[in-house]
Image (cartoon, rainbow, N blue to C red; front, top):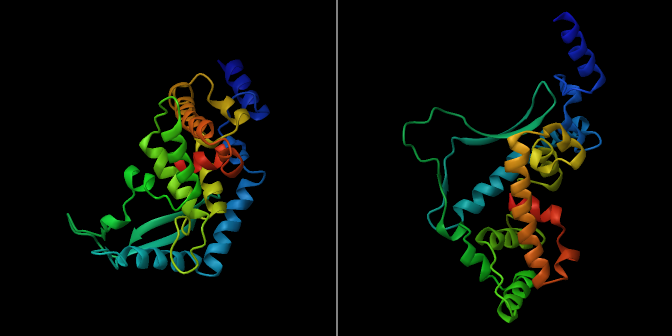
Amino acid sequence: YCVVNAAIWMGEKMGIISPQFDEWNPVRWFHHDAHGLQKELYKNATASAVTAEQFANLKNWIEGGPGGWVSPKLVVKDYLSEKGRYDRRLETTMAVDKDEVLVKLPLSHVLSADFCQQDLTDQTIRQVVDAQKKSSEQVDIAPWTWITLYTLAHTKKDHSAGWRFDTLLKREYVDAALSYMPLFWDDESLKWLNGTDLLNVHILDVHAAIETEYHKLSYLVPSLESSVSVVEFKKWAM
């Protein structure tokens, strides 16, 4: 028994066996310095009150629509955990009653597949719609794919006068947050999950489904691969 425990302890120390130590945790390998990135994000967010400003813009966007409303009890705060992870959390400043409404989102601000598919102001969506109509074979596009294309298209537009989809989730924050999700680990890090249902059933199936949709799009519009990478598509498809 003692020999086995000693062998396990040595294996953890050498990194042969899945270690129990935070500093060895593979989720930190997504970025070359994920721990430093988390601290930098927290410092930047709190130094200039960026989070409060961005949440105010989000509330203005919601309340700018018919019937839109956000409770004054809601705030977004920045946190840096003891383990060095940066998080943004939606919290309430006061107690919330049972069945109390905190947000009323206008229907005009809700994305549906039909709405996104009909937004022909974006060149990519327009090209996919035209190619789908002209295709000699039926190519079915999943409803969530149209929403992904729409959000991708509008994050790239200049919305200096108003709110945009990625105002709260800046690119660097998205990358940092996703570094903790196995869906976005690289192949080397995924080896830590070999033999688990999480890898064999969930992660690989989700990747396969998203990549299948991406290949459908690139089949219809080959130029899409140069404007939208599969990694960027996956980020917004999630």
